[in-house]
Amino acid sequence: MSQNLSDKVRSFFLTKAVSDSKHRPSDFDLLEMPVEAVLAYWLSLKKVIEAKGRVIIREEKQGTSEPYVSHLLGLLQSSLSSDNIEKFGLIKKQAILRDLQRKFILMSISILGMATNENPQKVLIRIISKFPISPIYEQQVFDAAAAVLKKMDEGDINRDKFLNIDHRMKIESLILNLIIFNMLARRLGKRELGGFIENIRSFYFAEGMSLIIDGFEYDFIKHRLNLQKKEIMDLTETKMDMSLHLCSGIKSGLNYDDLQLIGSSYLL
Image (cartoon, rainbow, N blue to C red):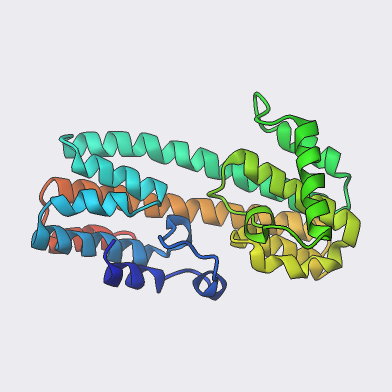
């Protein structure tokens, strides 16, 4: 992504906490962008392609870690028709949404476990139950988490690695870090977790932690997490649909004004 386009997209981040975070990645995240930013990205890409040619698509893909946008750029770069772009873009969308849904569920299990001071071992069992085949071994998770806490006591820990929660993490790393937080909550108490929020990239998990620290009741936290998860998933799907149709439109040679009209269908 060109620097100007990158800066423009970043300015649309949903929350100031994300926008200002020193842990923000160099690339954008579709989940964190409002619909207007998604439209701005694809319209800007259309202009760049018109100015520099289709070779820019390869460069853009190489510099884009956002998984769905990167996939669409690959389809756009290919010889596939616009119809096939929509077909395979839809398949990828469904796969990514399934992964997001599961990760949010795992985060909520961890948060609700902290809210009730549940034994981390039981929390891990609840997490594992969400998989047809466990992606990790229980004992290895607890051994690794105990080693991290020991390093923390010694003042020698990579906080960005082990105290971060992010939907873009690999599932094994996410589970380990969730259990670390549950063990910290049991060790320190729920009210002492505030100092770790700055290391958390996921605003979903960070808000859940804030509700715990502020002393909200379990039922309210659960209701809020479920509501927020639904809103995030619905909005993310909308942004993915917009991206897919704009990408397909670029492939089929639609002009800038027509693409803008397509994008406006997703705006109030």
